[in-house]
Image 1 (tube, rainbow, N blue to C red):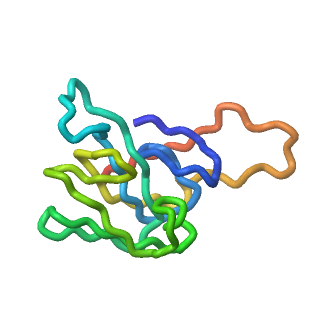
Image 2 (tube, rainbow, N blue to C red):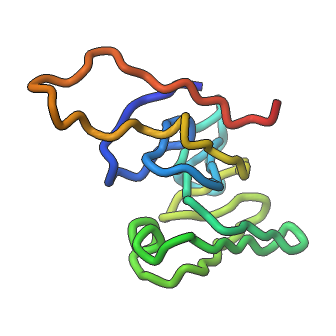
Length: 136
């Protein structure tokens, strides 16, 4: 999995280090159409969070609760902290894309993006965060 550093206000892609620690829902094995024939693993979707919880009922209903209304608005366009995902067949739907796999994982503070340098005149080159969201 590739780790990339990003701006604090950007929505992190699954595999990127987010700006805030916490619980995340990572979407991957994405496709644009639910009937698309896959020849590879598809694309990574967003890492959605930080969350208070993620709940699935009978593999038919996925619900989450954000820690803050501001984060809910970034991901869903409204500030309701509780959000639902649609399911099509065996795929989770988010922002018009379809994901065959998703995972819930914790990102500790040490794996988050460092704060922007306020005393440097140029950015640190090649600074990367190691991140492995899979359980050990």
